Length: 103
Image (cartoon, rainbow, N blue to C red; front, top):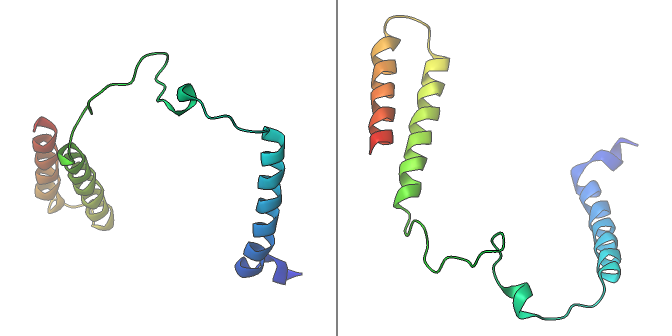
């Protein structure tokens, strides 16, 4: 009975099951009719903006660097021992995060 719980066999069982559920859902949904309103962007009844809010990836890189420093810093602090040698590292981590937040 444990053979049914192996990932390859479970995968092979779930694929036909998902396809049947998908087929039933398509039958229940009915025919589709193309419409300009259906294909347009919807934002709470307002028209969508014509330009992007933050063009480029530079805002993303600042946030990614913030979380990378935060998570790696906490990993180093969590794996280290609690002593006075960690205080300079913690102060440097806080200064780096403040510098990233202030820009």
